[in-house]
Image 1: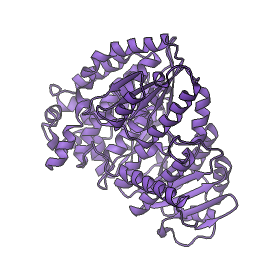
Image 2: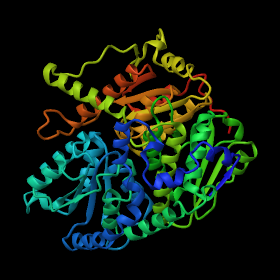
Image 3: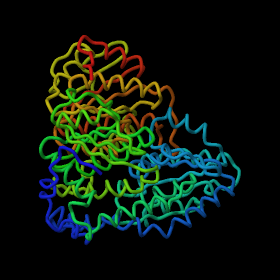
Image 4: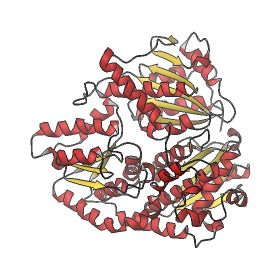
Length: 556
């Protein structure tokens, strides 16, 4: 790891002199003096020993994967959300499936269009469903399970439960359900590891083994790095602690937009990093804002709120990084020899996040504001049951293709285009724009959102894009608990089709709509600057609305 334009001594000076020793001793006072908070943290530090603790299961996992291949399964499908789905998604998109491995899919959505698309690719009787939830009660996972278990029961060949396995904590409702339904296998993960720190538990290692990836290799890379970050290593040579302390110091100085530049082969790692940093640090009005997937520009395109982190597979960093460094921007360079170095990076960033939390004075192991949107969704679904529809106020303005709602601070607007311009004009130096898309993911939607992202970024603000409800379990914590630097744009679209959730009394389209509305209300309740844009056609309407007189994107 190489740092440029970063005062390493000052960064380490923000930590106690014995931080590393106390970290490995699991000293919870590093993050809080409150006994209740310390008790909670104590049950979240198991990730420190995972590279060694999980080594013993690597062989049995590979043996289990071989058993599943011999049982005739052709595909594995993770039904998860947040920490239970993001590591499998990184592995799925980073590694090629070796001969004999199961093709892996990850479904972490409530979008009916995507669910029905994926459902067609899951051969009945030959798909192994991995129901993954640390708490065991995640609404998205429970809904996906109900949908696919009902399908497999209707298939009628063999016991449906034989085609399901569970990954959860001991004693959860999911473990009980799995026993009741006769799941083929139940894997219980360590209780003292939080969801976003669980990549090196069964949540990540089991899907890896089923794909044909050697989980032992991931653990070996992590273990080697963990040893190098132990108390015996001088703190100035402890890459993980130095990285975290630097990010914390830079965030305190206003450089809180950690802009990731990732090699194409490991681009999906950004999704995992985004959740880890945003959900861990974004609270108490503080936080690191991860920027993933933004096009790398010229130095003059950026303000003084950026730090650039390049992770290069094969050691080749982009040429534009040198110009950013020369212009004085803080730059971090990290090289990965091959894809198995992801194991090392999982541990590096977990330890760095712990150090950044200590510098910022926040508890990186809780997520106090995630529950707000969940509670709103539950309340809205209860209102649906009693009133027959979801409650929503009239839009501020509409045209034939789109409608807008917003917080009271937007003021009077007379057109959809005018509302977008007025909202964009509220951006302040150091702000970021968060595009929160509750739409069906597709290449066309991705392209439209990236174009829309460039339009919003023309104001000079950093930009993020997230699909709902995935981001609720990731950047959603930062949106509500982090600094008031966000300019939020929620994008919704009428679903072309729905899929019923067995036993729920409503379909996935309604659940997704309730989640979007619940999140909008949570942001309003926090006094955030938020606009909701409902469109008829994602690609066409976003392109149309981005063609205003102020839509020019500056050259970079």
